Length: 397
Ligand SMILES: [Fe+2]
Image (cartoon, rainbow, N blue to C red; front, side, top):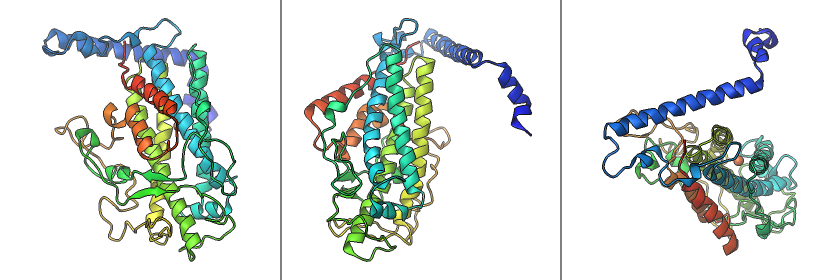
């Protein structure tokens, strides 16, 4: 059916966006009023217990953040968006470095060729992921300003060195990609029926430590060399290992965003802030799913087995043998424990508890990744403060 003439198209044309918006907001308000009533009922039954006050039950105890005047954000909502803006600036900075060298308009042909060995569309995906992060950062800061709030500016910390390889701009960076530890526990975690929010720890299928994710310079990896599969020379192997590391790093970064946004969204009070966090968070999850799939091609035939001659890092064949926790095409989340072990397993993003996937946990994961290697104490104190403020927010009503 022609969409224009479909009944639903007619309905949507007669409803103004404003009318739709206000009916959505009314629906959300009704929902939350119902939640508050149910919680008050439980309190009346004494279920709150001796140590849990009514305020704690409602999540508003000692919570000045929840107070807000019309048109303004609560302090808590502003803190959530500010931390999200900081993370997006960090993400945008690292993606720009990947994009300059390996994006579809990127300037390092050998790196582009090595990335394309994982998937011919890698350069396009890199460019699009970069655009997404830039848009997230710009939107969040513009939204904060529109609400009379301070935006986040990390420009004073753009002092880390760039790659010297052909294609990279020689400008200061917020993030380091020249030597990374890439935590691969997400690979196993999403294949497991266990959930880190129940205290389970995961190990990745192999280890990436102190490995560059972008070419360092043209002596190390000539920009015009070919990148056959398998690589034939030490320099070709070096470049392929660098590209493979990038492939796993893409997924590491985006799975962090996939967990972070739900933890922030649970704390939002204003329906529009919740809408922003859920809507951006969904795109982080989309990115993660994509990169999870592409990274698997580095550890599957015919590309598997590459060894970096400088660092000794080897990318094994995770399909030889294929196990439940390693098989490369098992990229969709396995149903796992969720909320209570007495409930049936559920296929979900994990972790989503603040202590495991929240703001402080995200900064710690990025720090352990060496993403901030060389950053100043002032940078760490700023991002840690923003993270602590975001994690301490409680939803208000
Ligand atoms: Fe983002």
